[in-house]
Length: 173
Image (tube, rainbow, N blue to C red; front, side):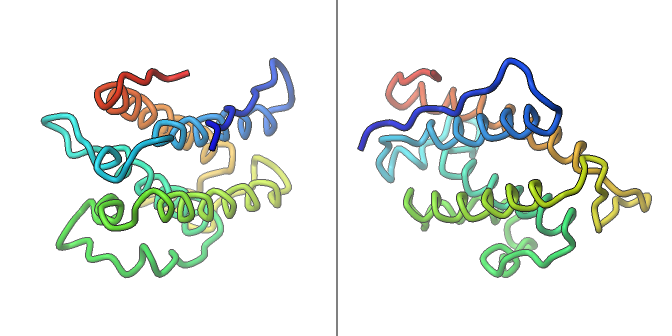
């Protein structure tokens, strides 16, 4: 299978288009870091961190559900993540990667992203507010969620770049 191209980002456009294009770019960039890795490489970490590319992908699947499904739409977390024992492992969503393998990671990640995209498209405005609130009782608007997700992906794609380079020298495109 050929390595997929990364999505294009327009040089100009309306706010929703540019925000979603940047978010889709980082989503694809994270998955690109896993391209061609075997199961052992997918779990490789850099000391002293416990992060691996597999752990980052399962984490971001959970983050997509947390922000778009649970907090923004007010729906329940999918059973895959809701049934985790957070008391036993505060990073339980990351630990799933050790047993899932790349195919399952991609399926779970793609399902989470697909829901997030549908929710974003269905919103009437970037000013639409979340169902859930923060500890102070304040809602997030969709604009804030999209910007937060771009920040979250940018940070973790940086982690994935370092891990991938240490595995086989493959540099970010």
